[in-house]
Amino acid sequence: MKVVYFSFTGNVRRFIARSGFENTLEITNDNCAEVRIDEPYILVTSTIGFGEVPDVVQTFLRHNGTMIRGVVGSGNRNWGQNFAKASDTISKDYMVPLLMKFEVQGTKKDVEEFKDKVGHFYEDNERKAI
Image (cartoon, rainbow, N blue to C red; front, side):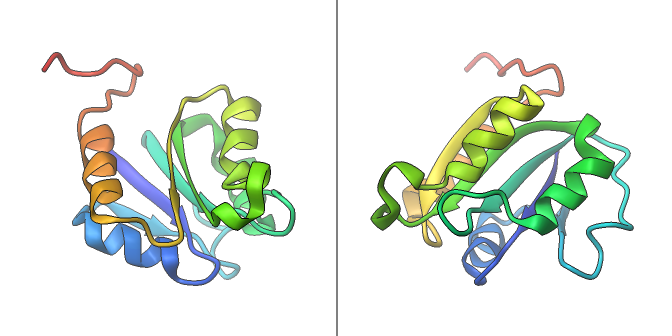
C-alpha cells in the first residue's frame, strides 16, 4: 500500500522514515496540484491552526481523493480536542477509516502500530486474519 504524507514541520517525515516503508510520496507546496496517484494509498498528515486540514493536503485531495483508503493524523496533545483533528475531518469527508493518531513524531510503539495497520490493510478495508 502506498503511503502519501504531508509534513509541516518535519515530524511526519521523520515518522515515515522510521517506518521503513519504501512506497511513499511526500506532498509539498511544489507538487500538491500536479501529482496524480493511480493506486490506493494511506494518507498521513499533520494538522495546522486550530484543527484545520493543511491547504497542501486539501489541494492534493481535490485531485487524488478517489484513491485514499485510510488516514493517519499527527499533532500535539497540547491542542486538546483539536489534536490531529485534520485526520478526523478527512476521515469524515472522504468516508475512509481513521487508522490512528500519533503525537509529534510518534513513539516507537506508534511506529510499530502504523507498520502493522498499513502492512495489513487491504484496498477493500479488510484486515488480514492474524
